[in-house]
Amino acid sequence: MESLNTRGIALPRLGLGTYRLQGDGCRTAVESAIGLGYRHIDTAEMYGNEAEVGDAIKAAGIKRADLHVTTKVWNENLAPDAIRRSFDTSLAKLKLDFVDLYLVHWPKAGMDLPSIFETLMKLKDDGRVRAIGVANFTVALLKTVVEEIGAPVACDQVEYHVLLDQTPLRKYLSAKSIPLVAYCPLAQGKVADNTVLQGIGAKHNASAAQVALKWLLDQDGVCAIPKAARAQSQQANLDALKLTLDDADRAAIAALPKNQRLVSPAFAPDWD
Image (cartoon, rainbow, N blue to C red; front, side):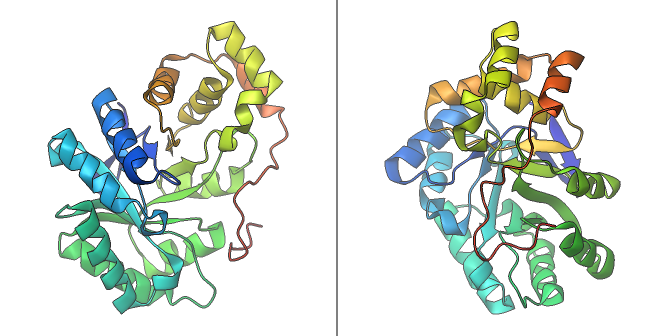
């Protein structure tokens, strides 16, 4: 599995997202993914499944050094003391000595960015977090964190797929050598029914979802973390890496409407 090197960590290009995976189903899915060769597992305090992810990692028996684990602090816990408490709880549930990447899950109006990143950096300096980053941060917020505060941001995790344009954000991240980690890379299943992607897939003996995933992973500086509960789906996502898209495929994908933002809660930042 190819990785992106960022702020001292190696981030595997394809990972397993675990949002909405719960209980035994979550544990089984993570164990299955690790068994198939996944080495990048993404969870969060808000997902309510860190304990199950931790159980699966322990059961898989893989060397800790061979596995990348990301978790995130929820936006209601962005004061320094709350961050520390949340992190302690996450680490205990995961049954790990450290996490590879710790993210601010969502920005929040009125948040104190300098104190947030001072706290995250302390966790990093203490060796409990290997790298820090953000999720759902706009270019304007990134400029504050990266250029004014000088925080060593290892990634920005955002919604990104063939039906949503992220060109301005990608250009900024690329200029700063910060990877974009794409969540909802299959547009919550919407890509499966897209006739353009189905046509491209038929040409390559692949599914529309595999085409959409490979389109993302062909881009410099982009990782993807599709959620997949079943081993069959996990393997299909891995097999997408074997696809070779041509110029005609990319032109057809470029022509698709790219205005479908599927994740935009009331507290989301102003994306424009």
